[in-house]
Length: 231
Image 1 (cartoon, rainbow, N blue to C red):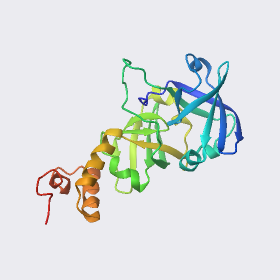
Image 2 (image 1 turned 135 degrees about the vertical axis):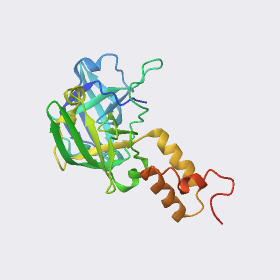
Image 3 (image 1 turned 90 degrees about the horizontal axis):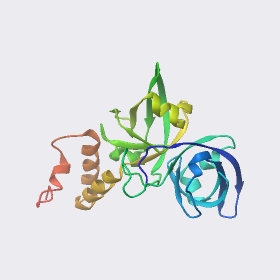
Image 4 (image 1 turned 45 degrees about the vertical axis):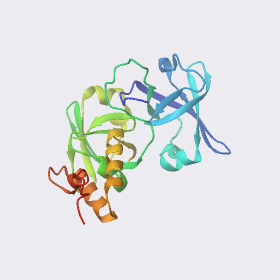
């Protein structure tokens, strides 16, 4: 489990194809402190397992399934990636609950720099859009962000402060770049509950539309009633 509060960035030092996927080595610097074989680390928002350690250089294996669902297949030596070590019991939860399981690939639509700040517009894949709500949480490349504005075409905006731009790789992004996205874990459970409560695919679509639009009075309310919201 992670929080989306990125601790720093790591540089890819090597990559090699394996029989089952890909092996990456990253230079973590002081972020390698305390890590051991088998530990979990969020790399660009993806939960990976430490399989080797040489001083501060850490190795990770990526399965074919991970490569199909992420952009790691295009990662090159020298690239920076966001890194967060797993959450410890009793530690502060500064962001939100992040599993490190990427839900889908999005893309950068636009970047607007405002002096030291920036507003980024990203587009989410259709399956992820019902989990996006105004002022809700979303994980982008492992960074916990707040949805500032939600648009009808699946695009959403986030406002980035100088600290986030300096500490993470979000400052490296350009329009058209692919990005890892993970929806809010609590939102997934809510949507799953509503999906079970829905009596038809059409009603499920209405439920998702109500959630995405933030309607105060919509079909989603009927799913909570004993009558189930329809004949």
